[in-house]
Image 1 (cartoon, rainbow, N blue to C red):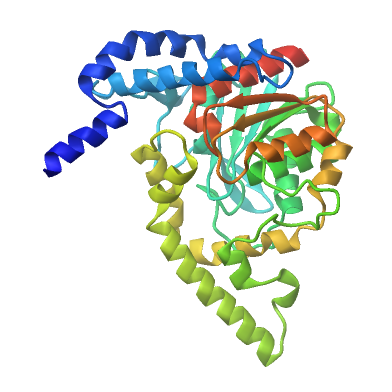
Image 2 (image 1 turned 90 degrees about the vertical axis):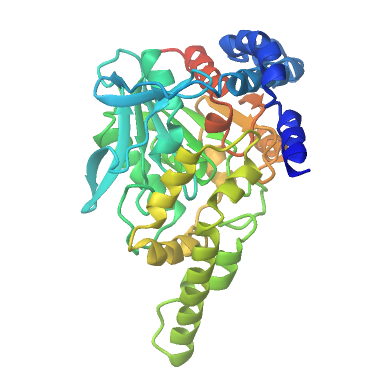
Length: 397
């Protein structure tokens, strides 16, 4: 029957109440350890990988066991509203109106900060494609509670920042990260910032670190996008459907009839892809997450898609790769400071083979694999935050 099938499916996912209760104590134990066992292996974490995977699975079971809890009340942390998720992990509470504002090139860009008066180092967090500052909702309080000064930016064109038609590129966003880390986070040569970025945000972080090393203390690439092969051309490793549809930026903006027809076709096609993607937000996220995606994350991305300027912005975002002129491998070679690769090993897009390629260029980088998908900082936040804090401690204040 349908109900029997539903019950069977729930049990298979570890959601059966009896099994969850039986495993809750074990899960809570591993959750409290934060999967620190990943550091018990060699420099790349190989020997400790299995233990960490089991620990994080225990953390997931603990989440499921406590899913019957009623919503926790809002926690005020230095003016920032926090909440507890079903597992008891602290995270930023979603705010429809966004958070703080910073004017960059005439645009009021959004950001979240916490621990501004702490004594620890500055940490600048950079989101990936289609995401925003709220995607670091677990990382922000975890690092701020540990004494760090934490700043998460919404890059222009994303999240709660304006949706405008600009000539986006990796250089464009990388410069915004540099300016944000200096103007808002207060990074200087004497008080440098750690920079962590996920997916294409990792490339923006890499650009910022390698271009402005005087204000960067260390770099964390979280399931980084980009082609790091030595002979690879600048731009995306594999073009998305939207990138294929819009073509190259050099072919846009011409005055001939063919130029205008080409741009019109690109815009119409991009609009169709935008709406098709918009109704599949949760499905797409679940494809690249190891664990369940919650409604607040889906809502946060949908909110950005409701902006009247989102369609035109999506068209320009799809051209960003063809506007990018610098190679990721060159940026990586230029960065000579401390480097960590925080990698969700279940990522179907940026698989661990990409991390291995980066390690070939930077063999001294610290490689920390965790049981998570493309966005491990949100998918397995306890292990990811602990890994970041351990890296910061290794580098030193």
